[in-house]
Every structure is written in structure tokens, then in C-alpha cells.
Length: 319
Image 1 (spheres, rainbow, N blue to C red):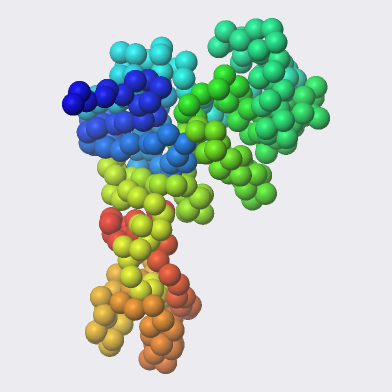
Image 2 (image 1 turned 135 degrees about the vertical axis):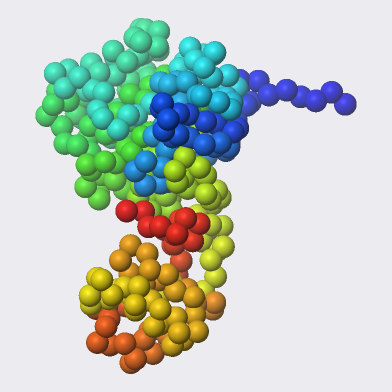
């Protein structure tokens, strides 16, 4: 049987294999391999310097990789960058809107860049204005809008030409919680249209809304899967203890480890330990407070989070 080759219309939106990128002697990406599927909301999660923005810049054709391979919508990078740009929408971390133009004028100008004219352009503008709830503000100058409203226009601009892949770099920076939820609701709605979204973020609650997440650290993928899959890798509960004296964190860690015969870490100025069973954390908290009350400022217990996954894989916090 003849193997069916993927075409630009059927290929995964993003495929990177062993991707590397260096800036002089500094390695920003070190063998990254991942695939973004059609209609998937995919998150790149990591602290500053983890490589997520560099990966975003490679996929959006802004920079070329130093090694490995990258295919976007079935096209090789960097040799087929022009074809890639026709099929992607991009929302940058910094605004790319002209604040002196109206909302509608910004969208019309974007459409002209993609060769849209006449009725086709007018229909696309109205469709995207309605999608992001900005129809009533279409005649307002962008400079008069709130941060959340500007982000809505950025999203409409990125979707105007009907891309299969939307790339967003820290899109909620500077937004209030309500505007953040609003933006993520819009991204979630794109799944039904088959539009894939690749989003960089350093916020755990945003990564939890993604279909799958790649956690990056120092240019490498340290974890990849659905948020549920990643959290499920850590059974039990996580107990976090803040010492009264910051310089006593290692001493408190060792004392707790000896007293309760558990493995404990001092990470980010707190003592962290994990129970093997759900429900065991409450009893451990009671014993810690009974034995170490004078040394403990606060103690908390909860189910493992994506940050716990990061700590488990790297031994460091997100800070």
C-alpha cells in the first residue's frame, strides 16, 4: 500500500524535531521536539529564559533555527517562510495596532496585506468584529480602547485572513483577570473551527486551559502532555512549609525529613514534600505544627499542580 504523504492542508500545524537555536555561545533551544495538532490549543509553559519565546519566533518565521527541523503547515522553515506567513496569524506580546486609526481601519489595513479586497474583505472584517465583540467600537480610535479591548482587536487582526494556526506570545500580559478570561474564552472557541493555537505563557492557570502543554526549561522540553496527565504523574499531595526564618529553610527541611522519615526539598525559600497518598497531607500538617510550631510561619497542603511538575523535573521553582 502506498503511504499517503501529508499536504499543507492535512499536515500538523507545527512539527519541530531536535530544534536548536543559539545566540552566539548562549543556547536558547536545545533539541526541542513537539507537534501541535489541528484544532488544538497548545501551551508553551516556562519561566523567563526557558526558550518559549525563541520557539515562538522560529515558528512565526522571525528567526531561523540553528539546527534540527521545523515544519509549519507542512512547509519547511526557513526555506518556505513566505508560504508559512500566508497561513498563520500572529499576536505579539507588544501591540502591533496603529493607535491613531480606528478599529475597523486597522483590520482593513491588515486585510490589504493579505490581498483581501472588496466584499470579501468587508465580510471578513464584520465577522471578526462580531467574533471578538467589538462591532460597536469599530469606529473608535484604538488609542481610546482599554488594554483588554486592544487585545480583542489584536485577536481579530490575527484571524482576519482565516489562518489554520494562530500564534500568541504572552497575549495576556498587562490584562486584568476579567480580560484574561475573555481572551482565553475566545481562544477556546477556535477549536470548533479547526484553528490550532500555540500560546506562550508563564501562568499556571492559563496552561491549565490548554489541551496539551509543553513545559520548557533552559531550552529543553522537560514535560509534555495534557495538564491532567502531567499532574497525574505526581500521586498524593504536596505539603509546603514556610519557615519563620528564611536562613533556616535547609535546617527545617533536614529536621522534618528525619522526624517523619520523608523526602523533603528546600525550593524557592520553602520546604516542600509530597505524600504518597491523597488525604495523608492533613495528618502530616498537624504533626508538623505540633513538633515544629516555633519554626514554621505557615503550612499548606494541596493536590499537585503544573508548577509541582516543573519542580519535580528541574529541582527549581518558576521564579
